[in-house]
Length: 178
Image (cartoon, rainbow, N blue to C red; front, side, top):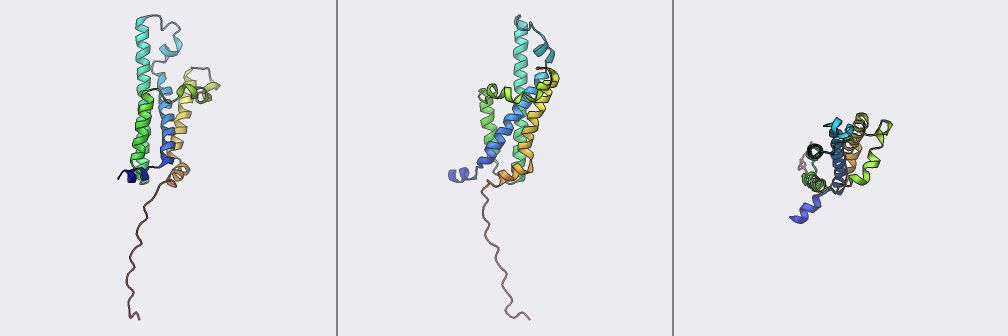
């Protein structure tokens, strides 16, 4: 039974959907950093008071929750594609659980990749609304591409171990066909 479970896992789907989920998490995180934009990005003395520190912490918690919402949306899309393509449902669940755990422990490497994935918005002023929206939408587009693009789906589908069906029984030939 365990051998059967592991044989149904699709490495291609696990990796590609994990990467897509990563993009959804940080796309939502970036887009919803606009939640309290004027306080987060335009106030220069916001950390001086305890009340301001509490507001900042609350804003960060809300932004993080929206990142998890992005993960949930990526999971729903992954699960839907898995059901539609007759892929093993556990692939989507494993990606969700691993990404959720790693996001909760802050092990997804955003600190290392932030500079790379925040480049598209640099045509605007750093931390401007246009900067954040551009970067969030680019990451959302990349994540959507990885989940929904037909060529990527076909690549994943080639990694699925399909069960071979028994050949159909032939109908007996009429002995005296005239």
